[in-house]
Image (cartoon, rainbow, N blue to C red):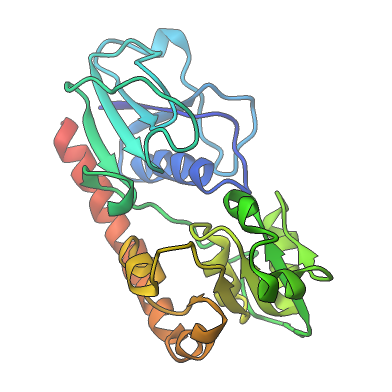
Length: 262
């Protein structure tokens, strides 16, 4: 079995990039000849590149939801919803012949496929000192200026934008509080792993219960608004347990991917 994961260059600050490359690594760990394309010669997992002679008709092409059509022209296609189709960019309707996989229920229907990497060599609480406040805007950039209580906290805080995991870990270990205007970034989980209180700025019209139901990693340990911080503190250990379960489950979900295309 051969699988080509269609992705751009590896971006350590991009959850989608990490997921696509980690999927390729897990497939290879399970004995599948999986490769990435296109590829610029650098990635975190030392994955091989797929060249044109290798892309035979039996290759399974894996495309994220931001890719339109079938660039590799393969008859067997897996469409992986790493976000809601059309949210990040406009895409053409996907053919019904494709098999859909979904990173989280909120992104659309499909076979569950949630692949994570906790990057423990960078993201950990050892040697933390605390004291600072850090924040990120990303997909929640439009909310800055509409939440006075959060905006005041973040005006003199340390911004995290496209930083390396080494820098992110260091910032979190030096922070007591991390504020995310983006309600979906994995940074909110990483902050907890570094011993930091983690809070997201709520979206208008979305309750804590509604937000938490959209992904299993949002139920514990992360506060949805400042008034939710104590509940988040009290459930941090449950988040750590959920992360371990998710890592183990991701391997089973990748095995299911293999069964579907075998």
